[in-house]
Image 1 (cartoon, one colour):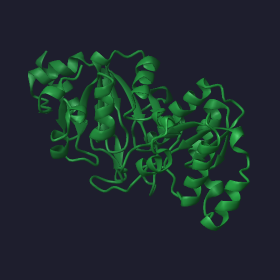
Image 2 (cartoon, helix red, strand yellow; image 1 turned 180 degrees about the horizontal axis):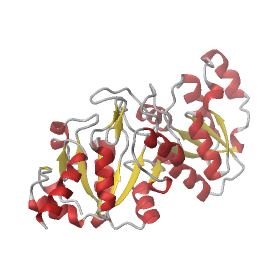
Image 3 (cartoon, one colour; image 1 turned 90 degrees about the vertical axis):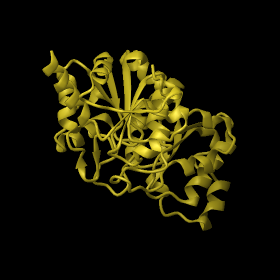
Length: 325
């Protein structure tokens, strides 16, 4: 279990016997994707080789992301299926099976499925891929999304007065990243939440920035969620990093022990906080949006155990361990 709350994070040293011993105790790594495995510039140097080395050493590899979009897109699309992510990995020379990949859209779909809302309407602020995932995994009927793109405030009053479908027929509002976000969409989502006390609220992405390239970001889901939920208790049903519900889902789904699992990410406010909340070890990498200085200065809930330039250091440590045997 992580002990970073009581001390400063350590710079991971592949030549350190103590650090290699720590690595030998880890049975599974959970990797964030954007900024850890790839950026818009392509695969992070050494990432593919490091993943291969871990597998060869018998260490489990899993991928967990709030944002499963194509690295080449201006705004990555939330809600891609594991198969789509695996196909995009393949183009980058990265090996991954669909069983190793979990996106927040997968978890949102599974959550809705557990609520028995199959066949009902779900209003979505998000991309088409998110809508497809919700339909596939929960059997719901997504509305909104691109169909409400470009609609103006001038038509809003009529739309809310004559909600179609009516609020009582909408079982949930799901919010993800949306390249066509608008006042219209936020107001309509709020109308469904206010019009139906039983309407579930699910958010899939709290990240305040995307990993377009190292240190180059653009705002994402957090402000949309805040604009919608306010103090609404339904905002507590969040199914993405750093939520505890996602941590429980991952540990249960993959049969993981947090004491031998390490979360690897480039954000302290989602990835590292998620890992610490779940009781996992944590490794922060500098290949994404946050600097090592910021990670080292983070509060106890977001402070990593280790800091490294990239996940390539893991292969270097494994090679060093093998050479010492």
